[in-house]
Image 1 (cartoon, each protein chain N blue to C red):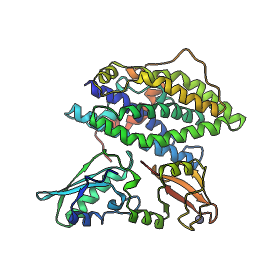
Image 2 (cartoon, each protein chain N blue to C red):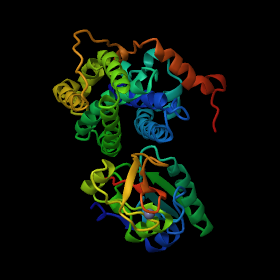
Image 3 (cartoon, chains in turn orange, purple):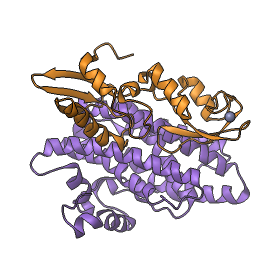
Image 4 (cartoon, each protein chain N blue to C red):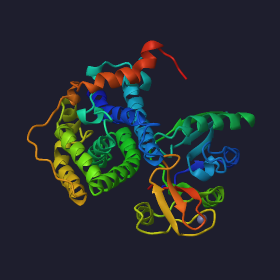
Length: 166
Length: 248
Ligand SMILES: [Zn+2]
C-alpha cells in the first residue's frame, strides 16, 4: 500500500472526518480514502485529494465541502487534486467498509474474487440486507461507475456492490 | 506543441466516444445497459478532462479544458474514425466499444510507462477503469455473438462494418513519432499484433467470424473525419456556440 507518505495533521483530520462523500453520505471522505494529505502552511490548510474514478462528479463538491468545513472552524483552505498514486479500494478504511455494508452497499472483494463475482462464476458477494451469499450479478455497472448491481436470490432485494479497484 | 497534439490524439478518442455513449442516456435497450454505457461515458469524459487540463496548462493563455473540448473545428479533432461511428444498432454500439476498449487498454498499459510524469499518472488512473469497460464490452460480444440467430447476425454485421476502422488505431502521426522518440508517447504500431490476437480470441469464443478485409479507412488522426462527425460536433458544441462562455 502507498499510504506511507501520507501526512494528515490530527486537528485537520478531525474536521475532515465531518465531511461526507456526497454520493454515499454515511461515509466520510477520510473513510473513503480520498484525502491524501492535509497540512497547515502558515494560516492556510493545504488539502490534497484524489478522485475515486476519473469521471467522479463528486470531486468538485468534495473540494467545496472541505473548504466550507474548514472555514466553519476558522481555517481557510486550498484544495489540490492529484491523480497519482491512483486511488484504490484498499484505501477505504475498515470503518468505511462497515458503514458501506450497513448502508446497503456490499463492500469490495479482493481482485480475484471480484472478477469471479462479476463474471457470475462464484456466489461470493454477501447480501447487505440478509447476509446470504446466494446473490446474482445483474449489471456490471450500478448506480455509479464504481458499483455493480446485484440481486439477492434469498430475500430478493437488489443492492449495489462496490467494485474492487486496484 | 507536439505534446499538445499528442494529447489530443489520445483525449479526443475518449471525448468523442464518451459523447456517443452519452447519446444513449435514456435510450439504452434496457435499464442496466443504459446505466452501464452512460457510466462508461462518464469515465471517458473524466479521463478526457485530465488530458485537456494538462493540454490547457501547456497551451497557457485563455485555453481551458472547455475551450479545447467545445471550441475547436472539425479538422482540429484528432480522434480515430471508429469512435465517431453512430449508434445505429445496439450491436454497433457494443462492437465499437469492444474494438476500442481492447486497443485502449493496450495503449494505457504502455502509456503508464511514459517518461512524462503527468501522462503516466493519468494512464495509471484510467487503466483501472478501462479494465471494467473491456470486460463489459467483451461480455456483450459473447452474449450477442453466441446468442440467438438474430443477435448473432446483427453482431456479425456490426463487426464486419466496423472492422474497416480498426487499422487506423495503429497509424502513427508526426506528433506520435516525435513523442515516441522522446520516450513520452507509445509506439502504437507495436500494439497491432497483440490487438488482433485478443480481438480474434474473443470473436472465436463468441462464435463470430473474423472479418477478412484488406481495405481499411483512415483519416481521423489527421482531422479528416467521416460524415457523422459534423453532426456529432453540432450537437456537442451547440450550447457554447449559441451562448458563448455560458456556465452551469
Ligand atoms: Zn438478501
